[in-house]
Image (cartoon, rainbow, N blue to C red; front, side):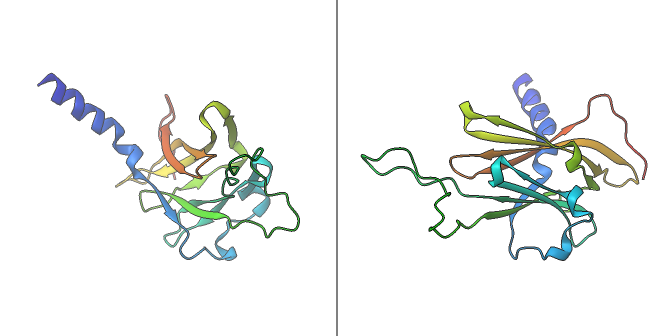
Length: 173
């Protein structure tokens, strides 16, 4: 019984993390969906390999548009390190476009001015932390959270989770 209770507690505790959706850009949102001013709602990171932008979704919420370059191809057998994308004669690689949303509603706000980025070479990951406000269901209140994105450098994976602010109360509209 104790194991079942602990398992249920873990599932309930993990439930808010499942609310984040990562969707392919299909179709790619138009430039008119970018929230203005653009200099405050877009960022270029990792020497241009990662680009993020806050866009307005169909419901008026904010989603995060994430563009990433695919990882360089692995070296062929007997060759040196993998080539990078800096060859001017080669066509530029196609970026992967994904949208990160909060439970189908979008976030109330995403603050790219407060964005922090951390490289984790031992995990081959790039971690972004974005301060955000999310809607509290069936309420007019907002909750301060941090959207945490983990990008897999070698396989171009993307995962998203929300961390609730510690000791913070809900913010009014």
